[in-house]
Image (cartoon, rainbow, N blue to C red; front, side, top):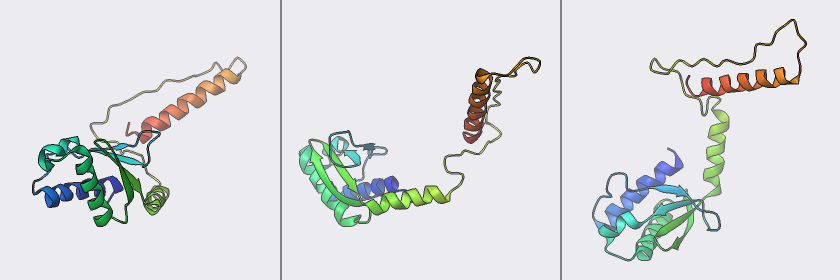
Length: 155
């Protein structure tokens, strides 16, 4: 299971365990932590205040303690900034993620389906009766790279 999915499921379980109510659908959102703050992922706590009936800082502290206790393989630590819970992720999680990416040769590729749009990429076709120059090579490489990107995207 992907690390973010594990965290989302653990937050939903925390809301259920701590406050006796289920989190509203789609209310658990993780974002990349802004520069200048400690942590890698940020959980916005404001959607849970109605359920907890506490201040944002207290709700974030509750959730942070729950996550570090129940998900120690993923969450290394946390800090609270107003209504935001900044999570520090265990280095082993990042290493595991990179190993999964390394082993999957088709990582990031999307298979073409019957509903994939047909795309034609037209790029340079230089006149063979004239000398080739660096501009022709550049345009050929750009077209080739774009075709590879579109193929990886399922087109």
